[in-house]
Length: 264
Image (tube, rainbow, N blue to C red):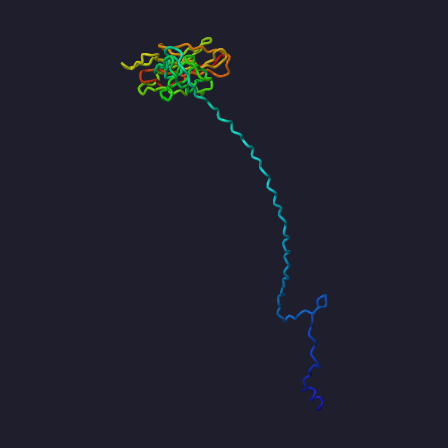
């Protein structure tokens, strides 16, 4: 009985604790138990060294020599001033290069003068007294030149400065038409106040026309309100003309005349 009582009252303890359960991964590495706190892995970045830049040799092109052509300026033409002697009894000297222009003064036989310029396509030259300044225009064949008058400075007839009237405009009404080998130019009359008449040729057509295959300057004066001007075919340049009217103080401003072209 004592043995039974003793057995019934005693506590049975196991001999030892069971071993902890360890999970294994397929590789056989032990994994932490569920009670452990996962620690994120520390990623250590190993810097990749940057390659040192390779210095590239820059080739500087050799400068190309630029050759600038040398322009030789054309030499300015040189013109002469001549001396001349009047060879007729009295040569009329005009304000412009032609007989229809207003009278300025006369030069007499034997007078020595200075010759300055010539008008292109004309036989009129500009003169003055030697050492003087009062210029006018006279026919070249009234003079005996000391030299060639063709070496004088050439100027256009429209470069010749005329005295301009401050009182009268152009009369207007200027028209032109062709009839055969002539140009017929018409205009309105210039109505002058008493005492303003120049008592010389009142109207001039300054024409640049073709005569015998050459362009010539031909000033045509008249007392009428129309005039006929010869103009032949055979020149490459077109004909051109201006109109002026005179009163005692000078001329009305130049007006271009609308000349029709030559028929083909």
